[in-house]
Length: 198
Image (cartoon, rainbow, N blue to C red; front, side, top):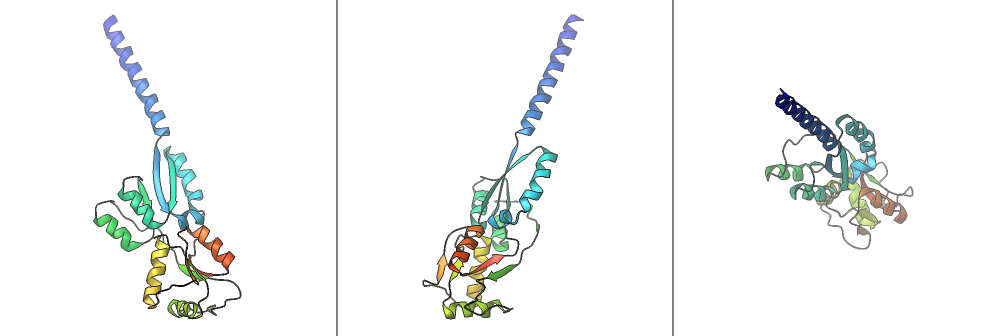
């Protein structure tokens, strides 16, 4: 009977230790999440992540970079989840076996922003090709993120569709995220392609 009691107490103690250590482990789980600077700048993560972390006991470590860098982090296995916005790059990422379970989560529209004096006179222009041609023809400052982000990829496609290959002092590739790019565009009184969420 004594031996049985010791075995029971040992098993019970082992079970308690396992339960306590698993809850300590659960509270220390970190999910590495690469997303775009546009998503971070939108404020959406500040709304969604706190209730998620509280409900599941998982800390989400956000790495906000351009789409290209986020996908590279995923390819290297440096993150657990990527949330980006460049469909062709996403499809390639999945096809090459770097990810599974791709889902459309949300969408975003793009607009061209510029100074209120509008030197290229594009205000009200609904045709983006014509707007870009006016900007290029007048060589008015244009800020390009130049960071291989989804926004940058979209911008390059728009220039290509307009059959314009921008170069010169008026066209500045800065290699920065959306927030920094907007600040530079404001300082230079330049045009910029921006997602509406930001």
